[in-house]
Image 1: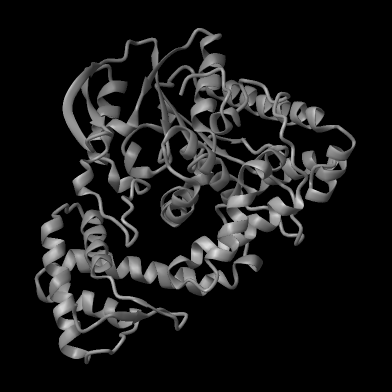
Image 2: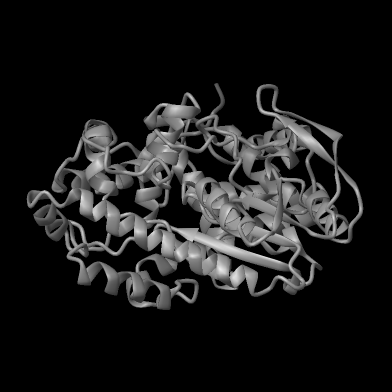
Length: 446
């Protein structure tokens, strides 16, 4: 064991020193400037550790800021100025976000789709679905099936409008993107939008962007051993952009294949070419991320953004966070289809959210249309499925400095689920509902 065993976080808490975090931070900075040499990142991290051990006595716990200073120093001294710049910029970005966090409630964000939200809030208020207490009253009056019907009808009407807007660009349209953060309902919405457009004679060809992942060994890990698939840099953006451009010009490309079992990609696997009457349909987490479509005429694209824009106040009178809804959705989906237990999903969510805030949320207002996938009846369905987990985590993560984020989310969601009336009978939820993507029982194949 090295001389340094602990570090001091900004909160003052001491946590175990993990050198892998330094290697990962260096590698992530390298990826941001086009580098993917993990071994070099590891060697540089070892130099950082050596430097720290030379400057801090045994049993001393350096501050996080001091470790970051050391990383910058070693990168510059070893001729990696561009990586150091990326690291410094990321560090400065995080610092600014921490400073702004306390003011966030009073400063409106330019990334928030206010007009859409006001419409959703007005809809919810007029139906007695703008608070958990109001929702509970309707459930007590045996109105749950009617709530389901109202919610589904609103979602379908949103999709009708999206289809109408896409058809309005039909003369030049060659690409349709279905974008949105994790568990926003992209897969089901892509299918439903496709059905609507096909009724108007459009021929849609799906392209799976997951096949453009770099090999797993080229991905950084966090201190919990999670691979970061959430960042757009996990994808070969240059190849994606090249293939998009060639396809919409009518040229043939060969799509790679990514094997999730082995974590490896094979290039030039599947020939693909768009006919003059065919449109590329893309379900992508990062469909709004500018480098993915750099240089492509906006008139040739239609971009749809999804988010569960639920406007419902919880037991503390604060509005329920959309990210918490999506967290619960992903827990259920991961457990059902991906052999992840809910705790793994919770502990990984910090990566999901960090990537959203950096690579998805800033581009919301560049979309052509926003579809609200939030259903006011979600919470009563989730309570019997997830309450026990959140109750346990609300206790388990208390005063755990390594899982502060998990505790904050778990305690917040626990209060919400505890306040809502449970509904165990989901028979009133249509098989075509976007929620079936997460709770099972869908008529679609995913």
